[in-house]
Image (cartoon, rainbow, N blue to C red):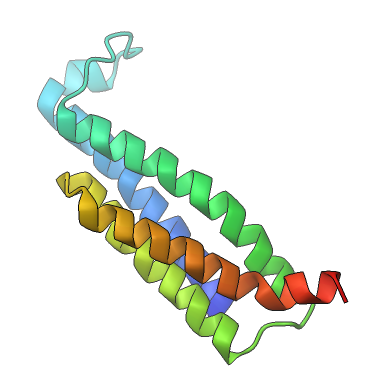
Length: 132
C-alpha cells in the first residue's frame, strides 16, 4: 500500500478517535441514562464541544485530501515527494486534533496551515497533469 493510502487510513483513525472520544467523554460526564437516551439535551462541556468541532474540522480537511490522494495513486502519479507530503498531512492533522482537544490555539493554527501546504504538495502532480 502506498504512503498516500496509509495516510488516508490514518486520517480515518484520527476521526474515529475524535468522535468516540467526544462520545465517551459525554457518556462519562452525563451517565448511562443520558447515553441510552435520545440525547435531546445537547448541553455539552467545553471539552466535548472542542472535540465535536475538532471532528467537524477534520472531516472538512480530509474531504479535500482523501479523494486527491486516492486519484493520485490510481492515476500512478504518486512519487516519494507526494508520499512524504501525505504523511506530513497526517502528522499535521494529528497535531491539529490534539491541540484542538486541549484548547491550544496558536499552535493549532500552525498545524492547520501545514496541512494545507501538505495537501497542495501531495496534489501537485495531479494538478500539473490536468493542465498539461
